[in-house]
Length: 214
Image (cartoon, rainbow, N blue to C red; front, side, top):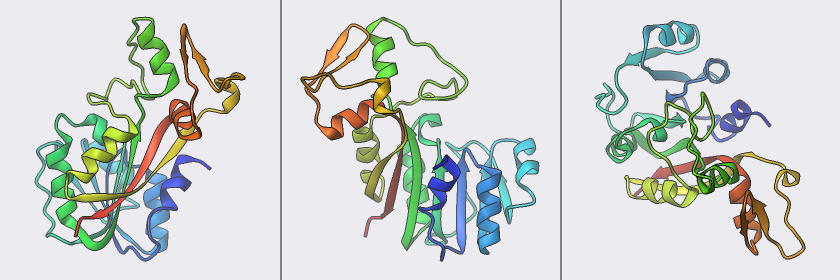
């Protein structure tokens, strides 16, 4: 299942007012509009706004960290934040503001790249920290998370994580378990690993679903 479909499956079909920010996908906004939803997008540039204009009800421009959104508390039935947390200098106050805008029965959907991904672990073991255009070490990322740290941040920000699932996962053949249940990443041998630990090392990105803490 591709990233777009995966996120759509977590957005309630009944959600009429949706806030989308971070990496806002035009195809996702189009699908939500076709559902009959009102989508508001937070963007950083006029060019990005123009690319979304046909599919959203409106856009708000500004820096994600400091932007004061012009919406009342409890307004949105779903908030979608794809790849937002790693782009924020201080994500907690941003999540706290967004949590207040979420309706009591709304759903918060976010994606987070995984610093525990085995290729990152391998590079660190060899003394490398190579930035790229996408992935865990994308140049746009200034904060980094494991699943545990991302969920802990969510739970400390007026939200309550209901699930954290692997979104982009490498096939087991890429980093197989040996007969003792261990994996070899570069010169490091890790294990024995249980199923959860093995999945964590193969996961590039997680999707976290949360609700507002009551």
